[in-house]
Image 1 (cartoon, rainbow, N blue to C red):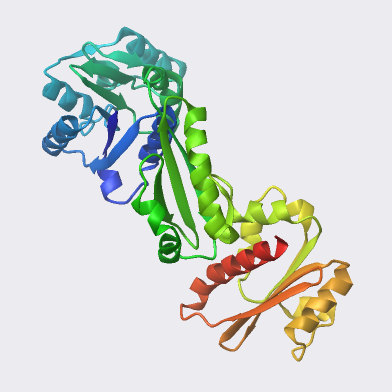
Image 2: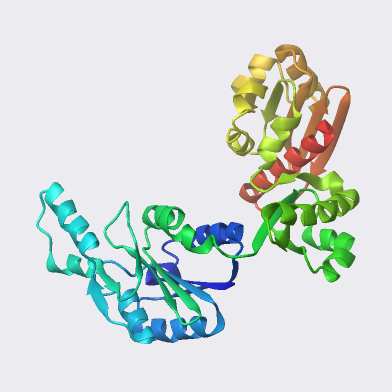
Length: 382
């Protein structure tokens, strides 16, 4: 089942909002076994919307449209879709009652244009809107499926989970994916190591995805059940990890920050003279930071005076003073000397020191160096 997601709204094209709706729908449908083939965005123009909808309908089994169901003049999605399908619009009584009750509860006068939100395409299954006024619609036309959803994410997400998903549960096949996450290896190097697997892929498929400072490798299997798909993925995953497992830190939604704390079993102290707290902000995103991050110290005159750190101290001497003061065996020291950024990592009896002279601006280096430090520390913990 090939799916196209057509997002309607000039604000998307202007970059005023991110198209998180398409991302959310893709994730849900992927878990249900549908193959999302395209994300398309079009502005609030009926002519362009009509042409785009016709094209997507011609090449896909399912077209899901988001946005353009509201009360204003530029909300023309259902009118345009109805025109293409040769169907008229009719007032849905349940939706109309809900809209009227909303204005009554708010003690406000309902303007006539709000009646437009209760209009639905004839013959459609109406999808209730639990957090807004405009209902969604599900239609089957010949061998095609057409879905109309509201634009606000809170309305759309609940509608998809509660009322749209049941229409897709009867599909025979299941598509299931696992995303393997790697740090410390670039996309080109990863592909070189796995090129034979990628070239000979069939089921499951393998797709490298570059991210910020990391690479994901999505393995996707098509099977009759989720467990069968998992069984197909397992030997491919095993072979991949046999080759580049040293760079692997987890799958799917696991972050590198969580991966670090998952491996850490004792307190950690960090002395930061480079990232201005960027590293701390990242680590605090993990639920385990309070348990293991004993102290995070920004380099300044007060910190140095408290720890008896002088400008002449080497980075190793600073690390030893941290260990002694806080009674810990794990420390990370980040220190800027002129044009060089030096990172010293010590865990138990293992130490590592590396110098980074990145060419980017200082602001750009802060996140990159924090990321390198996390990678090196995570590999050392292993």
